[in-house]
Image (cartoon, rainbow, N blue to C red; front, side, top):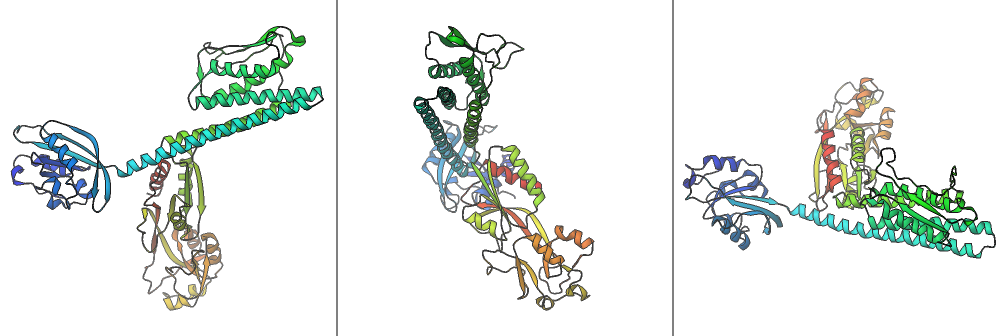
Length: 539
C-alpha cells in the first residue's frame, strides 16, 4: 500500500516514510507540529484509520477525534521539545468502534542530518487483552492460594482429630498390647502432622534438612519419650536443602526409623541417645540417611499399623503436592481446567496427537473432553461448559464466537453398491433422491433445527458417523460422507459415488472445521498452546 507523502518531506525522508509504512507493528512518524508524516499499514489496520487520510494531518484529528487526548498531547509535546523520552507508557483511549482500550506508547525524537527539523517516532500497541489476562491470572492465583491454604488447614485439622481419637482410645483401653499399638499410631499421626505443617510453611521452596528433621524429631520425642533424662533424640545434619517431594520421602523414612528405634532399641530403659543424621557432602553418601539405636546388627521393621499410616500419609501429601503444583502452574498463566468439545466430523487421529502433546507440555492441567452430536460442541461453548470447541459453524460464524479455521472436510454423496440408486446408470436428480431414505447426521437436541443438505422427506437421523456408515454399507439409504472415511469402501466397490445432476453443492461439498471459543472468554496459556498445535497438525 502506497502512503501519500506530504510535500514538505517528499525530498528529504522518502526512505524513512517507506520504512515506517511497511513496518509490521503500529508506528507513526510525526513532525514537530505533531502532524503525521507517515503511518504504518499495521497502525491503519489495527485502529481502523484510512491510510489516504493520514498524511499531513495532526495526530489528534485522526479518526473521529478520539486521539485528541490531553495526556497524549502532553506526552508528545514533551518529547518534541526534547525534554522527555517515553518508553512503554500506558494510557487509556476510548476508540469509538472498539470501546475503551489500554494502549502502550513509546516515543522518541529521531536525530538525523537536518538538525532544524523535528521528527518523532511513535509506536502504539493495544495491550487491552493482555492486561485483562493479567488481571484474570492474578485473580486465579489469589483464589488458588486461598484454596491451598484451606486445604492445608483441613489436612492439619483432620490429622489432629485422628491423633486425639487414638489417644482417647489408648487411655480407655484395658489391654496393654492394644494401648501400645494405639500410642504408636498416635505418635505416627503426630509426626505426619508435623511433616505436613512444615511443608505447608515452606510451600514450594526447598526444605532445609536440619530445621526440618529437628522439628520432626522433637514432635516424635514429645509424644513417645516419657523421661527425657533417659532417652533423647539429636539431629546431626549439614546445611543442605532438598526439594519438597524429596523431603516428604525423607520425613516418612526418618519417622518410621526413629519410632522403631524408640520402641525396640533401648531395652530396660537404658540411658542412651537416638540420633538422626544426614550426610550430604561425601561422594558415597549423598542422600539423607537416618540411623538410630546402639545395638549392632539391629534392623528396624515397620509394623502393620505403620505401613497403613505411611500409605495414607503418602496419599494425603501427594494430593497436597498435586494441588500445590496446580497452583504454581496457575501463577504461570496456565488455566486450572481446559474443557474441550468436538463435533463428530472432526478427524480423530490428529486431535489425539495434539492431546498427547498437551499432556506432555502441561502435566498438571485438568482436561475434560466430550464428543457431541452435530451442533452440540457449539452449544456447550455457548453455555460455558466448554472452553474450546472443534466444530462446524452453520450457516455462518456467530458474532459472539472467535473461530479459527483448521481444515476443510470434503463431503461426497455415496450409496451402497446394491442400492437402487446405484443401478440407475445415470446422474440422479433431486427427485430421484427424494424417493429414498437419506441418512442424516443431526443435532439430537434440536431435531427440528436448520436442515442443511437435506433433500427429501424420508430421513433417518444419526448422532455419530460410525453407526451411519454401518447403515450406509447395509444399503439402508444414501448420504454425504467425509471422503477420508469412505475412500477404502469406494476402492473396494462396497460403495459408489452418486452424480447428482442438479446438486448445488457440486460433486464435493466442503465444510470447514473451526477451533472456536467465546469472544469474551480469552484462552489461557494451555488453551492457546493447544490451538497452535492443532493448527500445525491440520496445516
